[in-house]
Image 1 (cartoon, rainbow, N blue to C red):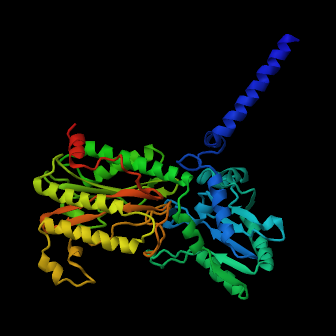
Image 2 (cartoon, one colour):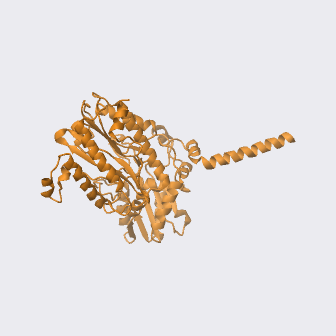
Image 3 (cartoon, rainbow, N blue to C red):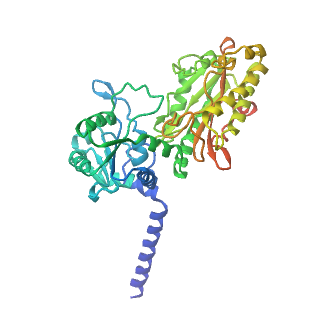
Length: 466
């Protein structure tokens, strides 16, 4: 009897230990339960539950909202480009798979319509040729959505929802950078729905999601910090690798290696590996030239982790030592970055901020002898003299897109994340310098999420020559 009691006590202790482990290690448990659909580790579904709750609060009464995954993009006759999820859809679901749909109808008289995720039903053929797809149970674990159905169920449920709903929220791409030439899934659905149901009130879901996405939650910031940390590791790797004679594409390969080995899905944008005068081409991506002794190398890259973007730029000497002129230009750019970083505070907006940074850059270009007082006095206000050597803005919003949505008059609020990336480009001298950090706006002032990445001339030289 005593032995049986001891066994029972041990059994009960084991159960309590397992419950403790389950409650405090959910991401670990999920990684064991859910097959590795993505390279990155499973995310906490509470992130997406909260995101949906925040969106639903903004909906008008009697409204249904529809969101769709991105299309797969054909690469050739039987191949597709790597799939990248629609950021709004991912923000609300955490589902990283094509052919997926979300319907939100919070005050539907039929409870079955209030929150439904629709997925492609896998089969043996898909499993053999493409690999694992979400099961219903896995989709619930990832998204927190309890009602998960296969795609064929969508048509009937959509029709029933439209019968009850007065307003319909549709999600389209409204980013000003988007060229608008692609007839994507959400847009096709919007056209068809408005044609078939012309008497409903149609509303834009995108402004609501955009405003929500601009303010990063603590959980999102942890993911973004992971992307930034992976990016930082790539920079340190490159600093120790670069030397005269290496090719730009060899450096790109070092970056890719560091990203993938740390579970990033790849780049948040195509990397810029620009040596010498190539750095004066703002979006140089050819990356096929030799890095020469005496040149600077501008490396602008970012890891993408769980669809969130890192984005940093560093400029350093190929041979490990800045020349006197290179150091002058670099330190001028660094001073602008440090001053601009301190200006990323609540209450201002990005358009006014850019104008103030231009004034700081103007002083530095005067000090470098690149412009004169006469140039400034006779300049066209629409095209100031500083633009010759600094033709771009200083900051952009960041998040699920490296250039995240947010307009030029957006007032800065705590939780917003922006780049800070002044540059000086002197084509006639073959010098291009850009320094970029990622800055979080807080109630207590700007917080540099990339502050640990070497940026001072002496730090860079020490690492390269160690």
